[in-house]
Image (cartoon, rainbow over the protein chains, first blue to last red):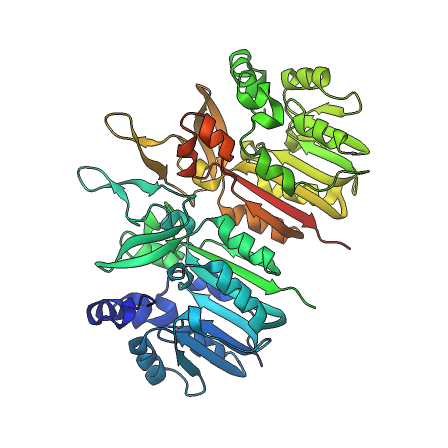
Length: 245
Length: 245
């Protein structure tokens, strides 16, 4: 059974109150970095893996996508997505690991902060390669290896509770971690940078862009504690392309 | 004046006693990872930036390179290199930042653990692109952003001196750090993964391979404390290629 925290009532309720849930893309600290790395969606067949509330699906539709499929494990998330986003989007309730599409179904596959929930990135990279048309784009964000390595995902603090630094440990032990997110235990999978890049390169992707998003100047100025996000990387965004035939 | 620690008598003496100095490539923990990422040197014009004792230059010559140029800031290092390695290798004593070559001079540019001493990676990536022939290879190792971020390059230890974890801090503040290496203060430059990859991609390189070397099974079994190197990444190796014309 794949982990489905988002259908847990308490977790879902807390997630629904996060800025990124209430304000959508504008409330996501990485959006200003992710947006320019996305491909031109005009006329494209787009797949979003781990679509959640459907914000990225909606963005693709609004930017001219011919078709958009959003996949998510959580019925609760998709219920909100269906209500809040365009009826043109097709939502599929399924674990990302179990969904199947025909070869060459999509021009672009995107995924926002979902892959650190998957036990194997190599497997999904191989599938995405198959599902993409030659020259198709694959753009995803995931939690950064620095952020996932040790497991606690929490700062090292002194006796007064002040942040000292961010702890990295067990970096080369890729695999399962138990993290605390919104007060709940969540299973995540740490992998190294090498794991991510090797899976992409060995499966026939070309690397087009790499970014570790930083909070925008606006967020740095207005959100308390946001300055601390300059002390550690929390996310990794990669733009890749299936090598044209 | 560029930093030249290797011409400092005490530092040079200590560096000369390191495994990688005594045993050469076999004594370098990352060699088993770097070696398969190097291009075929047969008939190639090769440049090594920060060549030190010339081990990699010698490897290139022994693997059929038509010509090899090694650049290093330290006269002391080059004196040893000239004595121990092939007379076919041309050594140039210069800071990496100040050396100049004609456009399209080389088929391959390599660099081992030198770029974290340079204030700008973007500048050297741009130059290397110019010096390479179209389709030429650029393979380098540098200290890992996780290793350089906080600055001390030392473990967080408990009151008994036991390792707790490795500290990351100030990750997004790229730039100068004062690290301790062999008991001496050394100036290094931290940069993020994004800094490395963006400089390569924006200057027209294709990414061919990414690796974070781990100690070999043999080293893990035979060298005390080597297991701890699985807890943090210390080096980053990137294989890139100048996009063919």
